Image (cartoon, one colour):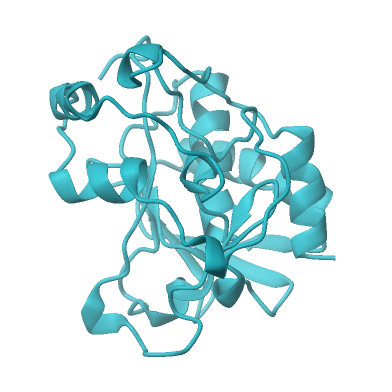
Length: 233
């Protein structure tokens, strides 16, 4: 996929065989940037290990990931560790991350985050958009466009046609979960919608029935910075 094409990232649904039943398992808290309260990290130091990949890519991933740490009481420590909470691979063709403490339920031999198209010579904008978005998920953030207080008038056939045209094409379940799924209002709290959040997808006006759209974001918005500080004071 060329760098001129818009790329999308998604949160990885935790496989049911790894789920531990709990009262807070599916509860979602949504502030300006949406977060999974039940999966917020209790520790303030998260160890990050690369399972494979190019060392040149590793350095660039670390550089952008640490931008989150500048705005919250959280630290990503990139080094070998016997039980790293975040384990990054580059082998899968998709780019994704598990949400917050879901990582604790994934076997240590398996990745909790993957970057499917980052190369050592990918643009700074590509790195910024992908790394900030996926590490936002790793900190417990969910997608801004899936909050319950906004009702996007999706043109479903147009959305399916676009995401099926990507290389690799998205499975139906990923389109449903990452685009159309909305979180229950009774399980969330939120303030104003933030179209500039790093956690929202670019939405082409042709994907909605009323021609509503959102531009691609590749940097943390002020709302993202304020919210992550609130999440990890």
